[in-house]
Image (cartoon, rainbow, N blue to C red; front, side):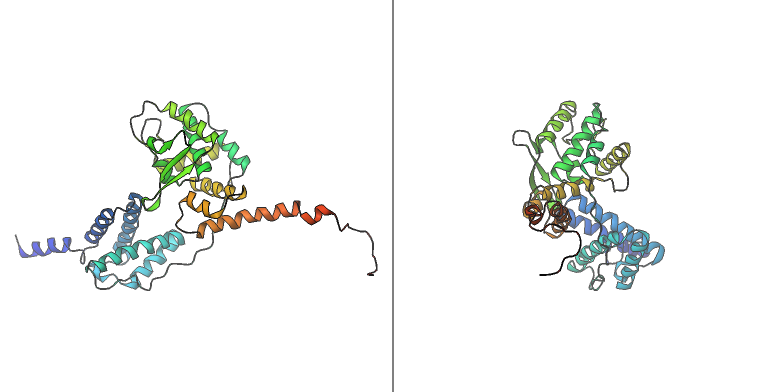
Length: 322
């Protein structure tokens, strides 16, 4: 074999000189660390976007040539072509990626050092109203898809699960007697959530219709294939469109927001809500609390204790101060 061919093969297999080889090493490490598959897939997705950006805008001959300026240019491009949120996800991914390369002595310096996350506008938390929920549920007929979709949406609004968590449910995860569901959340952390009687009846009706399905996945398509979060998103969009819902983001996560705010308005506390949602800290849970408190202000205006006593009555005309 010619010396030039040996050099080329060595270069292709050297993570310091070949970005694709470095990415493969990183993803192998992530899987060996037993990270959630959704996390690994998203890392791969964002790193592929980074590779394509380098290919078209900043060609480099090796991973070691990628500097801080290049990464900042990529983040700026992500803001302009996608969103600040996506840009921040990319920063998180690149920090994990280059941090791994430095720890493995593949690179001597981490080019993400000094690259800050971008400032984001605080997004308004959108929730469905009770009337909107009834309208959405009302679109579900008695056929297989209708029975399944009603069970799906009731689990979303009654348990506050993420889209990936709902799609990841298996038959064994449901405790029919205890009315609980075992959920595998972010970081492969398991938690138990409970569901109400109405949700239990909907789940039982759906389970009776999927009796001949062999897959372990609980929620399946009309052909018996496991649902994924993209199919779930399409189901929600279609049901909301049929219900005439507009002016609000129709997504599985809006059901999660609705659950959280409704839970707090009904008297739930932030600490138990944090556990039910599978949040690692109280940051997002506090935002739900702020939103639920606006409802409390309206209630106070309607049911002020002092107004109920009627100690001060409105008087017409002017009166001299005594």
